[in-house]
Length: 443
Image (cartoon, rainbow, N blue to C red; front, side, top):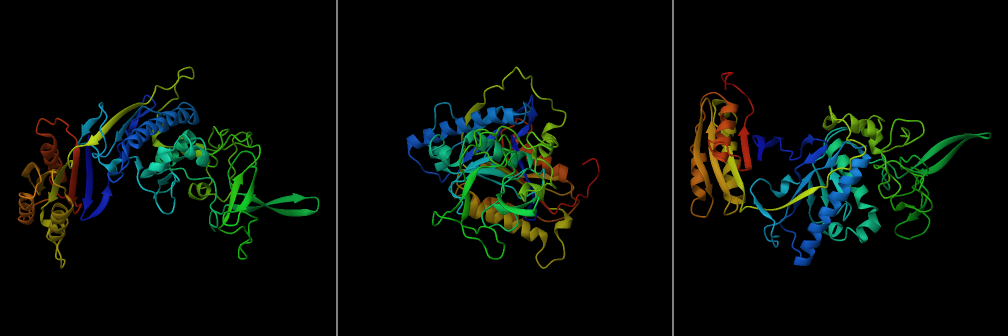
């Protein structure tokens, strides 16, 4: 599989999403990557790999049920660090890097600690970038993680739905003014309106529990400005919540939850009046409506109710030395603008700095450039301390002239990466251009 990273003079404008579209209801080539700096002993390595399989396989079964038989996880590639002990069935891969992970295992983010989270910079219905898990969460998947976060198969569905479908959490956050953990709901009685303080969880039945100050362990204090519990106040579910069936985005910690909320008046009811992030971001649509509008399900029908989803398949991979990259560099006349520092100069600076300071020994790099024609400037070559300067010199000698034929540049880059026979070897093409197509239309 080839990765294309398109850069417009240093600004990322298009990346690569490894997950293939649904094929027979199955997501293919889901990538779980473990950061190269995660150093654990051999026993922990085995446990982490085993628990990744558990998390994804059980998560796939839960996803199949949660999406009402529309989707499951067909296969997963687990990319382990090269420094880890390699299982006998592991294969070398030059296709994937840590940054390709749909699910990435790395040290805790100080804000979230061991809490799983999904990076979602986009809007409603837009895919997230990746799911983040910590080594401790995975290592203790069956004990402390399940005790702290609830059934981990439901945690998977919660995070996957944010990653893939662009839905958001249906609960509030302590001390948050926009999406508070508590809010006042107004009721009307014979004596007039009454304001009642409630936890902000979009569940189809009231969530039973108690408010607790996490610092003192006692009664919560109110914020004098909002009259809501302050940032130290959390809600701890206690009591019989077994009647709650929705939503995965509100209460994945409950064993009884088995549906997303829907635009109905009773069963799996979506409450548009809850001040949740999902309501705000998705214009009060139910999570189920947003999910069903996702492009993944265009033309897709649910699987036969009598057929369980196939078991998820796993492949263990470890990276080839350094990986493979082909730089496709724009040397057209438009790169020679009249700025104090031309586009061409910026292209040369960014490319050569990357080669000089970031590329590790053993990485394979090829160079191509294009204007109205495309040229192969250097074959894929392993970088070492004796030849690094050769790459730099070739880039620095590029002269801007001619038209901007983006297609010719891309095809030449693919030839260098995969060979003229186009035998897919995997790797990445880094395409650097000013982004202005000016070429014969046949190119």
